[in-house]
Image (cartoon, rainbow, N blue to C red; front, side, top):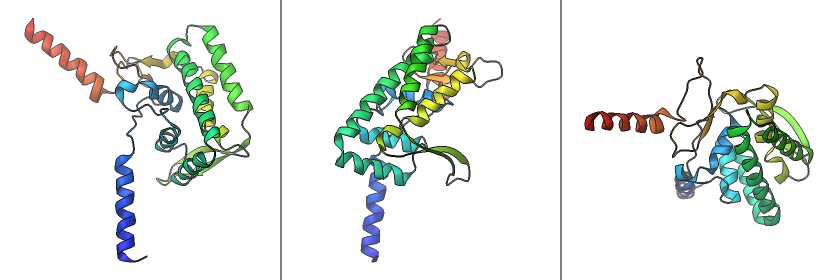
Length: 216
């Protein structure tokens, strides 16, 4: 590649990286981070369109950059399939939001989530394998066979299934900031984590308490 073409490609790559939406991952669990994509007040909705959904999956390390690019190209060739899985993702997210917020108390919510998890797992064929990530860590991966769109949600619903199987719902919390809406897995020893992120919600609450003391 000539120097001018190489520079052009580099500039294009940098521009694409800057233009990508920024997603927050603060929940300690993939399925909860997926639920948090509906809190539009905190950032872009990852399910606003198919392209953004795939970029979220890439940011969450569910897809590598090559597969992400492949799925975005395929969505242009098969827009109906892309729209179908996007609608499916929104449906799954709604059910998992209910599981995160009420599942520990409500058996009907758990049963609804179980039904949705099994529905998604049942309509996707593929192989599961362990892959080496660029940073040297390992991760489970699902490689769909046939309908590639149908397999995109598999890692998310499998992670939610783990929450049921491992009885983890009792550790799921909603951020104490009523304006936030994020949920997270409380991994602290004493189970007293209150904020999705101390750098944002935690500091905002701390500042509010400080203002109240000043005006007391």
